Length: 222
Image 1: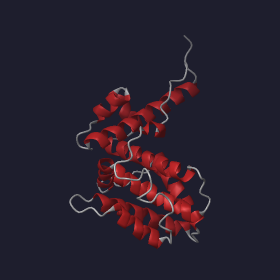
Image 2: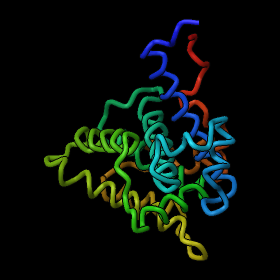
Image 3: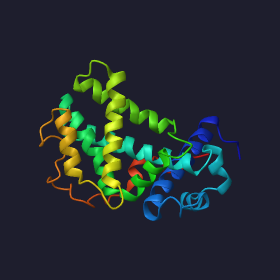
């Protein structure tokens, strides 16, 4: 059998990494961060356990990258859904609703993510986080920002604060209240984006398979 080409090997590595990200999102969402081990993630992904450290320094970095992927693709899907949103205010509304929707629909996963950011390792810079940042920066620009370098960090901080407030154990703030404050700040109409009373926006409505966000697919031929 002839050896695999470099491009095939690269594709195999990419798909292995995708399966690990997908498995991490599923398992942490199901059973929490502490109860999920790297071995569990490798087993769910169908990968050798030693392969995890090839792609990620540790569990915290893997989980943050996985959640950033979910956030990036959720945001991307919201911005691209039909009808198109060329208007900057509509795009900002969709961005806010996409992130708040994750707090509403995936509370265990997002609570673990927020807790992880506050650990000593801090905020993980990874390809998934950079793609998320690019989308949010573009949203600021289309909304009319005169200084994206100033307005993007503020938008990121406000969204993180809203997610945190929605997930505080024992004292969560209702997502519609947080949405109203963010919409007021960015001068958005309530019916923009996906209002809480819109079809499919009810708590727990997000039950679809997340595999569409992770390009695992079929293995390429040797």
